[in-house]
Image (tube, rainbow, N blue to C red; front, side, top):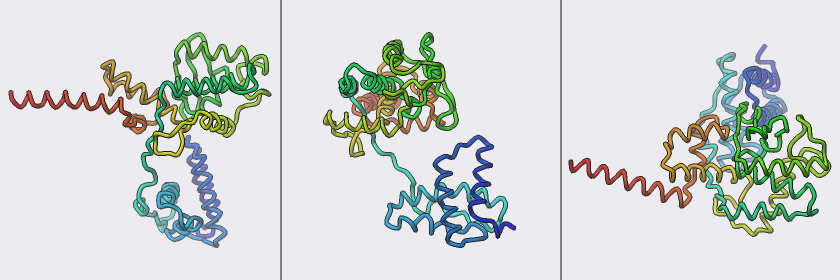
Length: 320
């Protein structure tokens, strides 16, 4: 009977169903299994209740910010809705109980000089003239030039890079989507220079990772973040965003903002261009791409000028 089933079995049933539908649910799955362990260890049996959900959401971090509680609640609610299809006694907690689970945090938008300084600092890493400095210079340059996520860049294999057409294939990443990412000839040249150094240290084959360590192993994200943190400290950057320090992911924000700025300056159809940009960067919807836009001075100045033109036309129309 359902009343005798463990929460672990109910969660696993839900995850199996979602996986069959093509959803990865990696992070949510980890959290849901943690909730199942909590519920089973507490002796809970029977339908999912608001009480057991709230005990888990708030119990382990009673002094956490409400946003943390809201984020945990957001993970539980789809599972609760799924269980309600089979057990009408299931209680679905109110999504508004703790407010928003996330807020827009202003990123650090890099200047062109900061990006050049980052690449120069990576190039100067030790041991000089070996694979390590070339790897990080090329990796950070690729992120800045294409807006790829760091995980996407580190999972690239040579089979995914078309040097002739100048296109990278990003396979099954966030939102379980694959996409083609064209890149500039200068990016192609940088990747080819890197490959010439790389093949002296590790074999280059279609299935080999593009970015590797000095011993030919795949680069862990944590290692890249630690290297970036050291370079950031050496460069003495001061964050212009809401976070304490600039991040690697801010290169992606910068790419999107600078691209939109250029389109405004060129008089492009922004609505159509944003749809194309959303596909290019691998967002699930164009609204997520708009989410990335930040009120940098250049964009705010363009927006102000456009509003002035709109207001002037409106006044002229009123007088007519």
